[in-house]
Image (cartoon, rainbow, N blue to C red; front, side, top):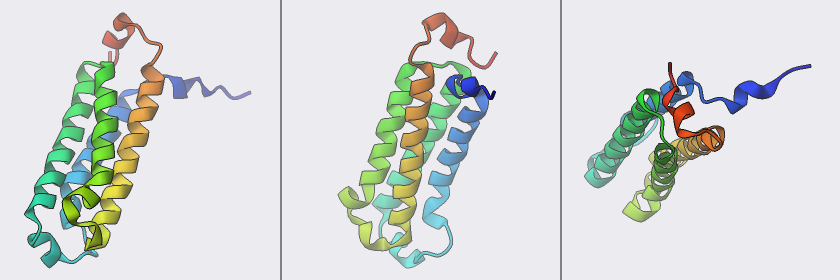
Length: 132
C-alpha cells in the first residue's frame, strides 16, 4: 500500500518552488513569443509584475526560514492579484503577457492553498521546526 502522508507535510523544496515561481514572474515581461513594443509602452504592467514577483519570492524565502500561516494567505492574495492584473491595469489585450500572468498567478494561488492546507493543523511549535 502506498502512503500519501508526504503530501500532508510542508517540505522545504516547496518553498524553493515558490522562489522559482517568483523569479519566473519577475522575468515574465521579457519572455519570448510576445511583442516587446507593447511591454515598453506599459511600464505600469512591468513594475506591477516585478513587484509581485519580488513579493512571491520574498514570502517563499520567509516560509523557508520562519514558517507562519499569514505567509500562505499573502501568497494566495498576491496570486489572485496577478490573475486580475491584466484586466485591472489594462494589458489584457497584450496576448502572451496576459496568459503568462494568469497562468503564473494560478500556480501561485494553488501553491498557497496547498501549503495552507498542509500547515492548517500545525501548532506554533511545529511551525517553528520547519526546515530543521
